[in-house]
View 1 (cartoon, rainbow over the protein chains, first blue to last red):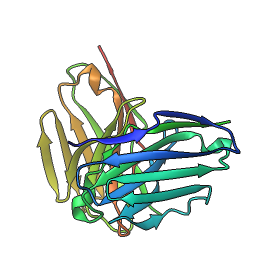
View 2: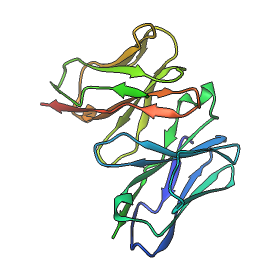
View 3: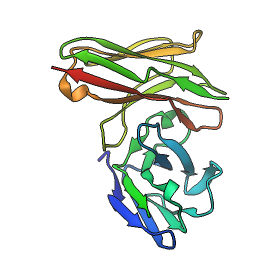
View 4: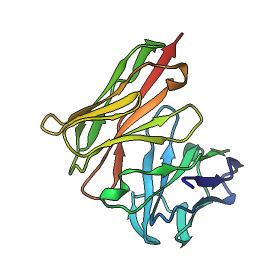
Length: 115
Length: 109
């Protein structure tokens, strides 16, 4: 099973709402990632979890809060977002963050619209 | 700064061969990866080069020259389904995967 799943597929939220994005993998990968992707742009790294610990935060605003409850799950909690946060949010996983982590497996993404 | 430059768009016809170039300047280099992304879809891994030379996987090949900080993805026997965006990517010294600017490939009948 080389699948990363993400829910929901689409999300519309107001600027005062609180919502969560969920990501799951059952490949035994120990590194998980959140990316943000705007139309016609490459994915931009937001967070990296390695062995369930946050290892990289790319200076992401605090209105985005990641959580890794266990080695298979990754959440992204959203609060008080801005319209410019509308984007495709991609979750990915890899064996780890070292050499074997070159291959990242991406989920289908959550398309977020902030009104 | 770190940069991976790619042509923004490439067009070709079915059955043709196309090459997508990537030049990089990064702090640390552990290899060059290539990802394909269809519109509305997720990036999917295509290939990885850690050493200089050509790696072949079916219709796709990838090349790396570390001394030139350059690589390319070669797509042969193009099919309509190959129409997608293609990203090169490099893992830097902080273990982050840095993506290139992306190349949109359009294949025409």
